[in-house]
Image 1: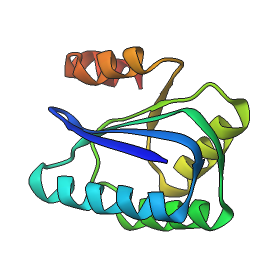
Image 2: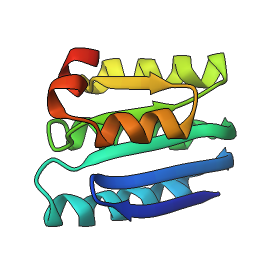
Image 3: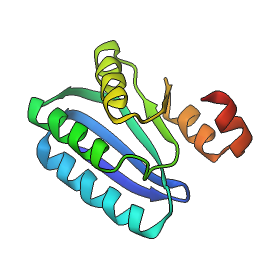
Image 4: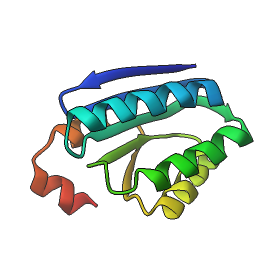
Length: 123
């Protein structure tokens, strides 16, 4: 299941339980829409309640990330499961996206809303 909310910085996306291709298609459409509205929108991806993902979804995510390389601003990822964090880091390596990882959504959102100098310093 997926929850997508537009924020002042871009998109706030939370994933619950299993991340499926259908969820990913909703995310892809939302990201495409926000990219058209904002130059380099930031993205907060909360994976802390995600328990699993399908292999076909993982492949779609890599394809999408490579297709939209350089179109995002900051990417904050909230994760507390080692295996899901490893998968996210591998995906970021394949797409050359620089993401910052957080334990809580509050920390991630505070970072996205902080001063640009602080954000660059943290990366």
